[in-house]
Length: 472
Length: 162
Image (cartoon, rainbow over all chains, first blue to last red; front, side, top):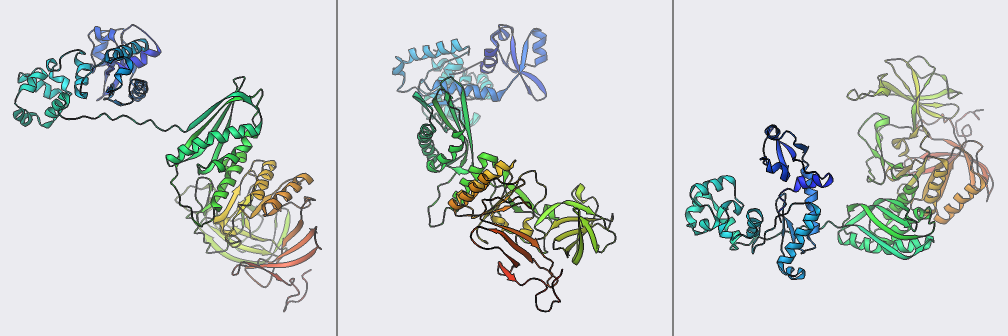
């Protein structure tokens, strides 16, 4: 199957028009025609032509930028459509499909009927189609591109899928058709053109096999169930969810994947649909563990007149290797379940854990990371005593480099019982940090006679005293 | 406490935070989770869920408005179901009637030791016993609390500070 105007057909399906039309692709700093429709072709334009030249020939040419990525997706859609004819469908270049119809043509009443059906469907769809049938892949390609019912030996040498230079050189030698090349002596041809030409020739003739690589469908992690009678009880919905989860989890297990985010869509009798979004703290594929996590989401569903269709989809999956069951406890699984349950209420990113960071600035000596997406990290160390709570620095009235004997903080008055320090911490000059714009800090641990143990600092470069934290 | 984990439930708008390097004397920050719910209702729900589950044996909840009897009782029942310890940090005078015990912890100045963590722990409500006062000191070497005599009554001191 060859789609000679795949790209322009794709665009023109959205806005049908008989006027000359072309898609433009920028190559080597020049805008060139990438694909054009029949009207433009009949005016003498051709693929690869400069856009300025084309405009000179055809002033009312309509053009659009080409989107090769969308073309590839459209070809993929066509590939899936072609699987109705046979299960063995592969791509052929950027604008063709190759089908191995051996053994499936009789289902359509013979090859001719099958081709007729393909042509009819594509004509309705508005996509130009050229078909070629052959005993080999090369022969089918040659017929699709250079004459559908022609004898292979009569076709020009370009039908052998060889480069333009080789074609020109062969024509100069007087070898204009495939039959002529076949009749020529092989050794001089191989010496002159390399193995490529003879390989293509043998592939077209069937002397060398050329397999078709069918593309595997990406696994779809979704299940659904349509119910004959609408349901409305929470227990019933949970039951259906369980029956949907089981095949989904079996599929995930077969693919060695785990679901990270599940979406349960419930359609009501009145066509309104509601969704339950479940984000998991760890990839999972265990029905018994996932099901209870849906409880909270399903409780909030408004059933109305009843639910008659439920669809469950794993929106986000992650690889999850099979793990050996050992004597170790499953505390981690329980913890992940708990994080998921709490996460459905307050958001998964609001459950955090600490990770050590490499900085001597107290505020930057740790990272706060979402617990669901990062492992717990050890390696904590504190060479000097640190307060247990830290707050933004709160200024106090005091003078001098020594800790004040008396001070007021948060409308309470304190007298210093013992001061330990100073510990000088310099700002990280390689970072712009407005909080440390006041320069060096001399930290003191001040035990007040009133009992509170505070972490004070003095900034010698712009004198002032601040309270930064509190010890236990 | 060294091996087990804990979850600290603290509303997101509260300023100030736990410094893991400071907390590591008392518990390993590796196993510490922090939940930042948006409102106290969410905070209570998180605390109840964590208490009931029992995956983490220790739950700390900071509240900003008094608990009513129903909320306090639910937390109490959840803790019983999960076999976990819940600790609710309350502002002065906001205790819940459902609590099993209520303590007032105040730091005390200790003239003897530089790295002191001396505190006065006063039990001001106890459903199953009497109230009392202890002076306690954390020993970082053994990870244990030591009950010590009050300042001023220790050997070598002059008298009560007041």
